[in-house]
Length: 171
Image 1 (spheres, rainbow, N blue to C red):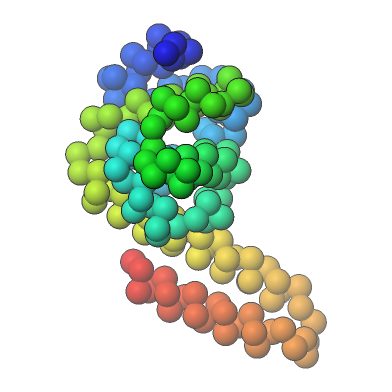
Image 2: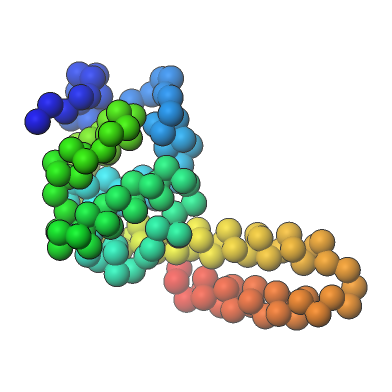
């Protein structure tokens, strides 16, 4: 199988650094994505045995970045269909060159993580916390738009209280 990666990407990955510079397409969307999301995708692609844990703990809707959601969805679908993740087979099924390149680049993170099972737990926790914080911001924005006496105010305040309590239990 031909990797379709530039030598500079492979060299950077092997030396433990990430590529910088101009990016296009999904890679550009991805570069603005959440560090924790990128880390969990790297971990799943590099250590396929971690996919089951991630799949059981979080869904793609918890990923804030659309490109990250796309990659996570593909990983989860491959896992559901085959019972395991085969990165080679996953990549072969992708027609979009930028997406294929991004997944292969993420899959080259081997050696970057010392304890994959602990790192996965940390990333899952990080994604859950980030999702709850985004929801708190959404609720706060909705509450600020409400007029006095709006019946939804109490419901939104109760949800904010519940999420805040959950955040204290997660961190």
